[in-house]
Image (tube, rainbow, N blue to C red; front, side, top):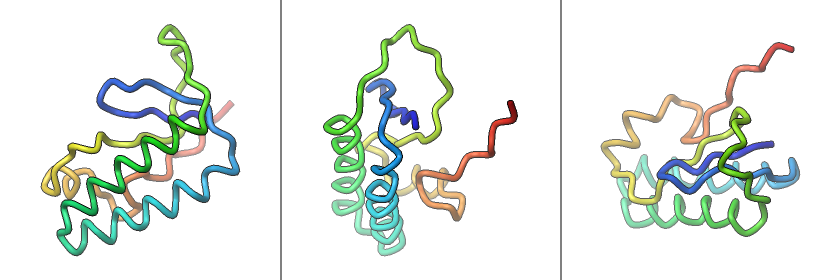
Length: 99
């Protein structure tokens, strides 16, 4: 699975086993967004990105692979997050790519 960290931090290849942990952090971030707890929300976005950086393999900048997941930057405001929020979390399920 390929994860893009928005804000210029690049793309990483992560093991599918990490998806469960990313989903947990995403759910917690959505809960913080619902409570309007900006400090917790930003902390969780930072933890999402750091988890990917720590456990993923960075892709070369020239690699133009499609991203399976996109993680917003940790400085995303609650207002911006509400605009991005689609009911599926901050990390939406992307449509299945056809071969």
